[in-house]
Amino acid sequence: MHPTVRQAADFIQSQLPDFYPTTGLILGTGLGQLADEIEVRAEISYDSIPHFPTSTVEFHRGKLLLGNLSGKAVVCMQGRFHYYEGYSMQQVTFPVRVMQALGVGSLLVSNAAGGLNPAFRTADLMVLDDHISLLLPESPLRGAHDDGDRWPDMSEV
Image (cartoon, rainbow, N blue to C red):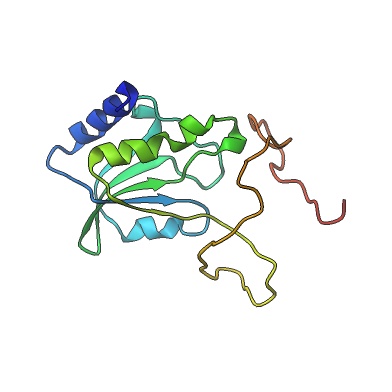
């Protein structure tokens, strides 16, 4: 295990020493309200966790929640950070490694996604089984976000 993963996991464990999460949740845009259902025992800001990046996406709160959800001990990321924000893939995936170091064996990751099926409606839940690019090529939208619209309207290019 990389020393930075161990340092972050140790810090998180020190905030609630008697807590051993088995399930991890990474909540993105669209399912963030699930965090309201968690019986929170500890709340940790990402910027206080060693080596954790911080989210710059609007509505991503940037907090790690430790608590119980439907009888399961969970560690929940309220928002996440993305490759397009300028983070490396190692930084983007760092929290998953930390969760594993905490004992998490099951992980649920949510995001806002769309599709071309006209039967899809706003707020439908779906499970992705395919996507356009597995290679994550560079994008002109990747990098630090200063101001303005991160996602310009491309419907009438």
